[in-house]
Length: 225
Image (cartoon, rainbow, N blue to C red; front, side):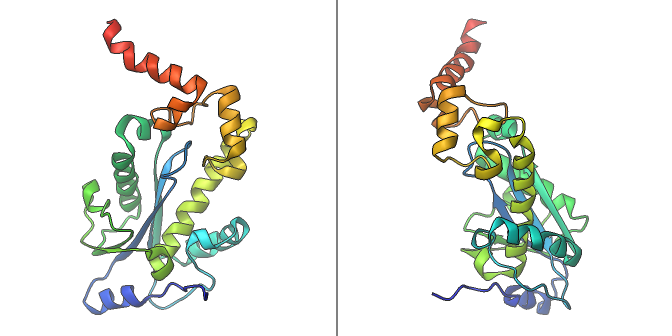
């Protein structure tokens, strides 16, 4: 099957309608068990292209890293917003994703006239940030160039954060799995318990011998006072 190449068709249609600042938005890290959830936002120029941009999931890590400096130099504006592990625990994932989106859009330094979002949930409008008109595109990271760019920027930025954490928690292979569940990650959790960057409020912690105890203590604490 031929690989879908994201295009500027949706951005051009909006530019033709008078929308000046069109922002592509995508999130990464929602399904991870550790680390932040991150949202990328990208505003593309109208007159220049960068070859090789694809949905970040279709690119190898080395390919994304090679593209990253080219994309940051190419974008008219870009930003990545994060919600930390603690914020994911305290707020819940939906609210944390909205928080990361607000930080990303506010970090652009420009006010969007229109936003293109990957998926069928408008988490940007829900974040309360000023964002103009919003279009949701299912599998937008494979179809829409600004969304694909945002996905790479968010993925590379978050991956670098997780690789930096790996040296502090060598048993968990965060440099390889980026906090997502895999056999070695699960084995480390069972043996050593959660780290300070694990999302301890998630249901997966109930199946961990250390995590279950920690959640129980936290949940019962108000009754002790």
